[in-house]
Length: 128
Image 1 (tube, rainbow, N blue to C red):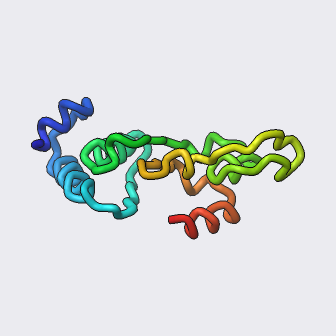
Image 2 (cartoon, rainbow, N blue to C red):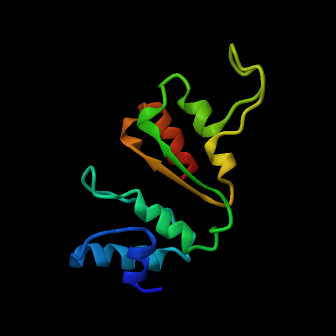
Image 3 (cartoon, rainbow, N blue to C red):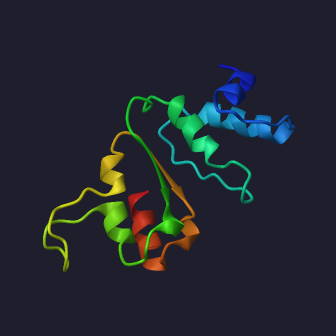
């Protein structure tokens, strides 16, 4: 698949050299099992790159989960990401899979990681 075909498939509009280089990089890392950090200014379409990488990877038939970490309340973020067992805390009436368990073998895109509480960021680094 060419850069132009990917742009059409993912509805990416733009013709800059740096955009094409970023897409080519996504195409190169897709077949690997590397963790990828996508950075850039707000509103630049960073969320497209994890989808591109997932669709070109060996994980494409598994789940793709996008998580906006900044939108999850601080009190529930650990449970959302890592899950919990029944009775683990007040109100935990059932066991719940976290996003990492749900995405097992697939791809998880964590957006706004910097908005997570520091303690959760530490646990997240251990997982990654």
